[in-house]
Length: 364
Image (cartoon, rainbow, N blue to C red):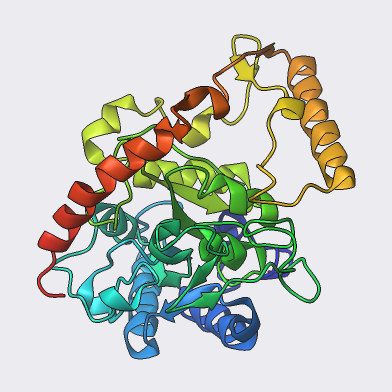
């Protein structure tokens, strides 16, 4: 069994080590907590961790279950970070703040169904990830990854941290709003995490962090117990270091009412095989870049992005997939009297959806 390196460890690799007995969940949790203590002061990826007097006994209990042959699933005893807009069990001793002081000390009655399903599958909720405050709804042109509670999330790949002249979501930024969950995985503070995505909030920081992630189909994962922006757009999604881990997380995260929609044998069963029958619609990367107000254009970076995306399309075609370039309306084309329609829909949904979340709290 190869030595486990937390910086690059995957959940599937950790599962093998746990099965082989070369590491325990209790030891694993302590090692990840040590890394958070060592590096989070700079990265600001994690807002809170489950207290050790709670998480270590939980890990020990899962180790005992494993020793007795009671394995809950492929993610049994593996730690995870949840974005801090996802309500966790009050017994874990952490607030759900969405990065705003307004929600510090607010009390949820129970965990979000998503969090409960993860725990039922034996996943250990190690802590809560930093984010753009209120998932970037705190203000206009707020720096990606900044929250009053958690500070500014920094990319582990950018020496010197965010450059303030390259836009609020520029290339030196960790991206957002699921900044903390993506940086936590990229920096080896946890092997996997869960973020939420309204309008690129998982996918942008995942590309900046060089990690795997998807935004699942809306409704596939329960949004109950998650601080919302607009339920017409919002979805939680998995973040990890490999496709196998994403599939394993999806098998756990999908709402139970959609269990019959999962592939036979689960998502992991579809990772191998031919792409001959797969049709993929793609966009021309030259026509789709971040607006200059978000990220100051850098020609060398744009060229690299275009070249690598085009190479990915070519590789998909070479493996048998049908790849077809499609056209969709640009953001400029989705305006009426100079006002963006997407923003209008999000704004109209935010007030009732956010009020519904607040009304569901035990106290705030």
